[in-house]
Amino acid sequence: MKYDWDLIERLLHEVQNSANEPFVPRMYAEDLATESDQAGHPVADLDEFKVEATKYEAQLLKAGFIASRPESEGGNGENFVLTDRGLQLLSMIDSSFPGEQHPREVLNSHGLAALTPEVFDTIAVDTV
Image (cartoon, rainbow, N blue to C red; front, top):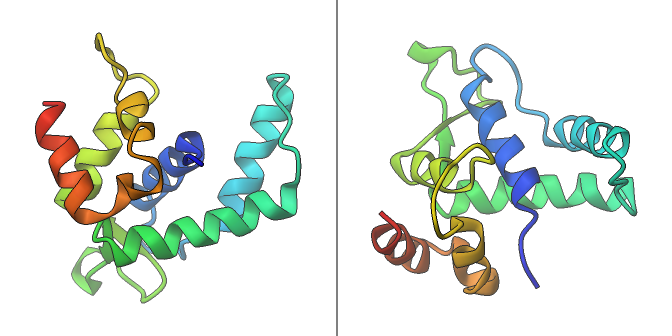
């Protein structure tokens, strides 16, 4: 099993843009599904895709990739900021990221452990 890096990338980008706005992962998943469908790559089950987005939100928060946005930065209790770990992940999976060895493949080689803090931190150091 592997992660849907396009969905995680979308969520991380939305975290960056969520000041003064609630973070709504199900809506972001639906937007991404619409874009994928228009590009000829339909999402098999939209409801499951939305559920996956909410699971990723919880996982990213628990593993320290995102944190509650401080009020001084537009935080409202319903939005986040990227942590240093989250910024590193986004830079690794950003679809415009150039490089010889695609970081998504490196992350996939670690399966679901790739987003545990200990494993990710090791991967991040090794891919710099």
